[in-house]
Length: 339
Length: 292
Image (cartoon, rainbow over all chains, first blue to last red):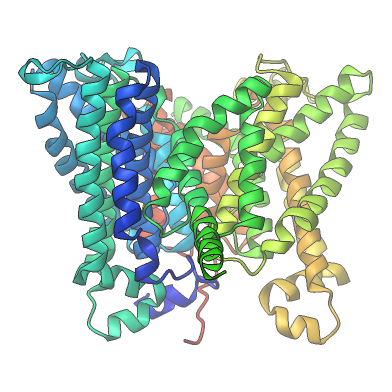
């Protein structure tokens, strides 16, 4: 099958086009958000710091999906698999090889990049719904792969592994939670800057060209196969980092924490945050962390339904997610200033 | 050799379930060009309805028929209310919609009937079939129902006006509209039929896996694998694919060392990916070529 046939067989466009400028926040807003993220933990309880850490971690995972889907126009319902690989890499290295937690993060980024790149190879031939299907199957199969008998010595089988939480280094007067928060924040900022620059670079333009029109992109000399697999690799690598951080923060990894539900949550976070809007990833992460808690407090066992109904509302009312809300807000402020 | 025949027969029996699921998946795919990720949950919900009806004292077959009717109407209602407005939306939005539906149905079933495992009756009994130890009457019944279903669908699509109209609406919507076919309602009808077929699959499999809100997870993946193997555009292919996948699963479990119950889902994954990579149109699917 030639490349041309594949693209048009989709019928609809996979993802709506997002202009490059609309993908990030302005400098001023970014600085305000950053300041808030730096200062707030000093005034709140440990549990809230922990939740903010999880927010950043899920935000990273959603960001990774956003690069893949919003950037290069490919689907994935299988991000939980990459997240699991990252988490297990860190846990196994820390518990069996006594590697320093900070060192495990680049290692799991590299391993997940390789895994994602390899998975991207067969996924190259798939698009739209087929890709969603293949990644869906990957996410469903992952917990069973982790429970395999011959891996049990390292992975701990069904029971999983307990991970030790690191202390603050250099005798800093900080609780473990707070140190972990700042550590995560540093990693998040680094990855965020990397992602923004990636999308502004030559590679980022290639991703977007593929997303908007694959045939046009390939006729302009973009190596479609290379950039599609690369997008998968980068996305998996970042998800792996999120997984590592998640394992360290939660202090525990087990196969059943990385089911299809996690993949669906991440996908949901992307839709809510706005596909292709990087800051939206963190809005989406806040949604997937806090909304289930609120739904649970309304009625136990109903959180799935509340999730679903909210997702439908987002699809119908604000199809561009948080980005649309942000743009509306911006316009409103602009109008007020004129008056 | 006897082990082999045994496993093949058992595989055909489980394959019947996958075939039903795949048939439902293909029906919706034909109508709207999307895979319904909520198909399994819809089937599960229908099965719970039939269980509830039986708890209220209805006989099996009365509950069966009422559930079919309910599923048909519910499928149409879901299409009309939730998915018709998304017809022109990008694929991403549709996938999000299916996932939302999945979450809603799964969680409300858990809320209404809770997550404890329930026994589900079989109308065929579970004694050995025709005195043979190889398959039970329930398994034979499943195979029979699947074959009947396929024959029924074949006659419906081949020899009725409305079946013809549905085929026309699926293959060339513009021309179909020009000759006066209401293509939008044909899609709704496809949803209704797919939901009804899914409910049959659910009611057939419930005696085997027991009734609970998460019972369809693995089955749906195998249904997808079967549909992909047979070709997403061919109902006949879906059924053949279902039986093949069932046999393959059982043989792999028996003869490949280390593949027990625990590797069942990874096998489905491997199957889906290899079919999509080697022969994306499946065994019986049509290659769709469009003008650029």
